[in-house]
Length: 426
Image 1 (cartoon, rainbow, N blue to C red):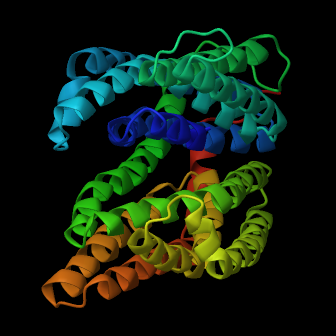
Image 2: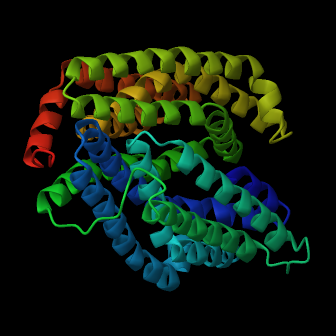
Image 3: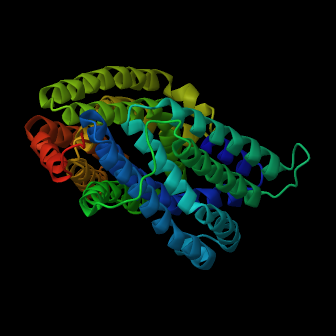
């Protein structure tokens, strides 16, 4: 869906591509909020599903949905008032500011529904139902693609709205996705129900699990600004090459390691709810082993096919060279992605979102930024220093997550939180 957006905007002008790229940096904010609240919801819903506490589970899910919707409302207002200012702060020219501000305003207008859709999907996944979110999200993405092509390019009898049409397609599809998710829950077509929130303990735990996850995601987003500035020191081609390599590995490996993370959260949470911490530990390690092997295999394919994959996106000789190097670097790093994300999902299923936050925060700022700047620029090793800094970042993520899962007290923490929520009603 996102690749189609980029391809379509590329038919408008280079300014349109730059505009949507810069706007997406800010559009990550509602996404991060939704993922964070969804992480809290999946932790509590999986645990309560395992122990049969339907009341606490439904309260947690309803509260997560309500909080997400309310948090999204100020984002709508901010988009109408400050969208162009946000794009201007990144140093964009007037044309990019105008286009990026228009796109960001429309996308921010759908922020409450975007957050609600993410929370509802994660909540359903926490019960073991991964098919309903798949169907709803798949249809929404298909509608988004059709809307982007028709409204952006003026096809199929639709008006040609350019970048406004691309933004409207995204906003409308996210709204329909949220409505559909809430509809299937309210119609009792899923294990979940919407229930009036009454327990402040559930609220406190939901926020306690969600906030570190939000900080984890935002630390990566915030670090992307100075890291992109660092890459630009080495030239525009280097910056473009890095983003091409990110698109490649996220397109090919992202669905795998994100799915393992969700699966680990579900199974570990349910096992803990059933009072089986040893089973939860085994499942977390088993999924991690599967993730390391399969994602590592994809990484090997990335290394072998880096050149041809890069040439799909660009034919500029310098950009191809740098992008091939970055893609091969991603291939080497994939095994660590395959280890980190299942372990992070396992910890999150046990309500420990602090350890993954510590891993990503320290790794991103310590190695991707600190090491790359110190070795690449200050000590004069150039891009070689940046390459090493990137790989060390992902090694550190995996190492910290592994340490936290093997020797942390996550099982005890989850048991204590479930006890605070009370025993399931007979």
